[in-house]
Image 1 (cartoon, rainbow, N blue to C red):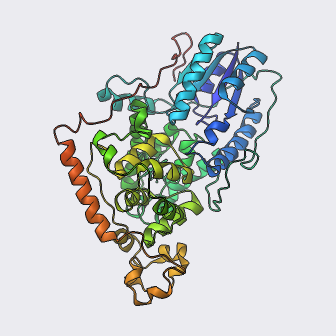
Image 2 (image 1 turned 30 degrees about the vertical axis):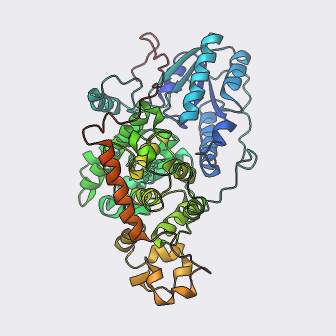
Image 3 (image 1 turned 45 degrees about the horizontal axis):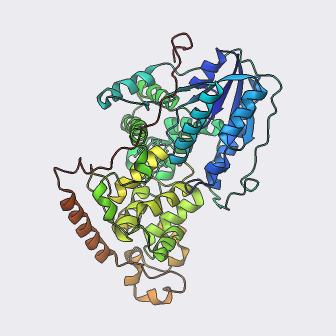
Length: 492
Ligand SMILES: Cc1cc2nc3c(=O)[nH]c(=O)nc-3n(C[C@H](O)[C@H](O)[C@H](O)COP(=O)(O)OP(=O)(O)OC[C@H]3O[C@@H](n4cnc5c(N)ncnc54)[C@H](O)[C@@H]3O)c2cc1C
């Protein structure tokens, strides 16, 4: 039997349940489909594509060494799959379950419908602790732990390729006609780079993780920086969890125990968060707290939105963070929370306008983490009261000597430290204002007061006891494709 393995956010050979299953069934045709509609979506960007393209190039070389041809095809998934199935006598498609965005959710339904009509068997497997069609949330943690404790899968032996497959071209962002996206310090893709980061984090960089992760200066080195590799699957979550557990078992001293425990917690939050979107796919478009739909104007103030996006709001720590993000494709958690909360609470911008902009700027865009976090920091969820994240105070606390702020806002070089986060209070500001650095688009104190009032009035409206009932209605969950039957399955 010829089996097609459809690769999506799983660009590796090791610990690849779909490939392992397919290899045991027959000759294998691994395919990555470059879907223009996906890459022209509001949350996709050239920086993400470039990371994926580097990862595909390295995967192609790894596959060639294992005797397989990685087929790259550009086009609509249904059209590409139906052509490949006809041409190479494919009767089964194996892939991993994907908790993607609304577009990929709809595409998967189209593919399922086509496969049913064409008599193609479709098998989808989990590749992390996220569980499709989870009936009972209270069983989730134990099931996730079972998955993580099972041995990571080695590269399948004796892989047999489907004959006569053309490799296909790997287009540049330009050839795909993606909008220009300058990101000079973007992280590199490819499994080798992911493994290098994992190793250096676990043996060298990660010791001060807990104390250094939130600083704009130390977080860049002390955080794992694995997020784009986990998002596009050059590393599996399970191998990351297991490598961390092995390091924990070696009992390193100093600050390591706390660092490694904290890191494992985040890997758990990753699955927890993606499970939330898996269960509630509508989180990308509707406020989880229904009453919050009226919190902000759906049509955002265009001037404020443009100033926020460009890092020109006149609030220095916010602007420096946004300019850093534009140049690197990454921010630590605390700063992501701040840029999102400030856009929502201080500038009054609806999360559906700002969320896609941030998604495009993150090389590591992962819908299942992104949308729950965006809603949380915009204050539109029922479960948490929002933290306003005052950008002036956070800048003073996290960048007391202004090294980070001045690096990304060189125009503020002459402003003394004491006024750096509120330069409008500096007597020399007029010589900068308007010409080189803008006046703040809002008065931060007044904006904070108004935001607090709006949040409390919303909470009163939603009513404490009614909050749960006031969450948005659940749209249909993702449909389960066939899991491998007992005969088909391996001990995955
Ligand atoms: C508004 C907002 C949007 C975000 N969007 C994304 C996104 O699109 N993609 C993304 O990977 N992360 C996102 N995050 C979570 C977090 O900020 C990043 O995962 C982290 O900064 C990535 O850097 P790292 O890999 O060095 O993190 P580390 O601190 O080394 O963490 C290791 C891994 O744990 C996971 N993780 C870390 N924090 C969280 C969290 N709070 N919730 C769930 N999983 C977590 C990630 O996979 C991360 O790679 C977002 C956070 C906020 C506040």
